[in-house]
Length: 357
Image 1: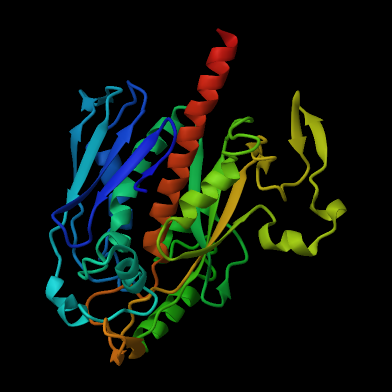
Image 2: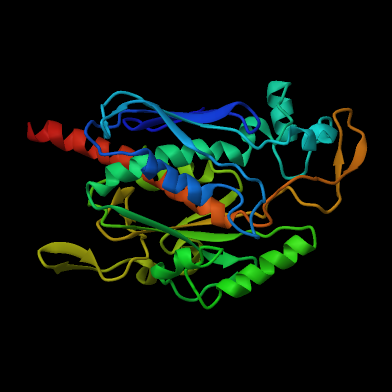
């Protein structure tokens, strides 16, 4: 499947070393103000070559809006956007044509389709997320009309865990960490892994503010399950949490339940172990998600693998790769979160619009 969403529907296309990557958004309401700069801002946060702890590739990732926008506003018709690939070095992958890279989808893709684009992973490459970021930028503009705000930041890199969340610090360090006192330590750990020809993963937290009560469905289409599906569809993700997450398994019900009170005429929770979602439906509290990101699979260290003929071989991946993907993963996580929320916001409006008509 290359499409996500029910009413706000996003289809992505393109390969890592193909001519271009792009997306088509169907279902975006008309008259949402949009400029190419709005899309480009998010693409710039995801693009390679940002710092010495990301890949040195120099892709401009310049967006082109092909349809669905006129005079700076959405028309209500399909929005098509592309980014042309401009800095591929396909020759870096020639020697890997018949080898299966550990940690990548080479073997599984070959088994499923019988034929693959070996250049950078083709469609299974992390570069496919360029299209998601374009679509997510549009979704965020839709959400901004309801003042819904999404933040994402590193809370752990390798074994180094942040202890505080300072939203103002996120864009002031290379890891986009929320704890400024741990950012340099995280950076040093990434550089040490890079120097050793290795890589590091970590944990990213996503905070969503000003979410109205009632988004999500009670059975199939729970907003937590849709968010999990969207986030876990991003390459390099390995685990997903909401609210108290994995720690819920260690708590008593009396500890994990969120007591309810009346405040300013609204029902509010005293704490937020539910992470802003109850019974698959948003409850008006902040949504808090966490995603565990694996170390990038392309590393300079020699590894054991096999070739297409099943023969044992050593592999050493060359080229330009990230020692830690988290700084570039964060805008992708925000984009996928925004796409799901935009879809559920339109679904909520459709239900209530019909009921009140």
